[in-house]
Image 1: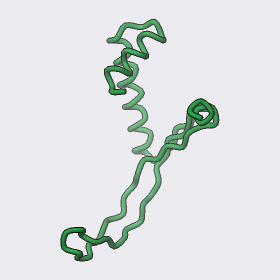
Image 2: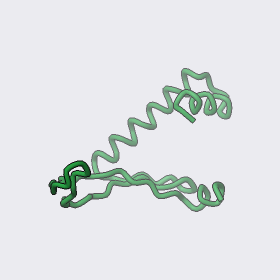
Image 3: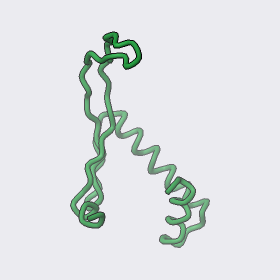
Length: 90
């Protein structure tokens, strides 16, 4: 499912116009980005938790040359599915 298909599904299930549904989805995405950028987590009971995790610096290899390279430390976004979502999928 791509973004436009998701907007259509939201509009249909919530009884909103596609324009309103797209505004709501964009607002959710922006709020999620801003919250994770601050280092906070978002917990949606029954759906899951979005959080930020730190990935340590490490040594890797260039697959073409075999030369060692340094991979910098960085923060990564993580998602852990909630119990209800897990059960719905399984």
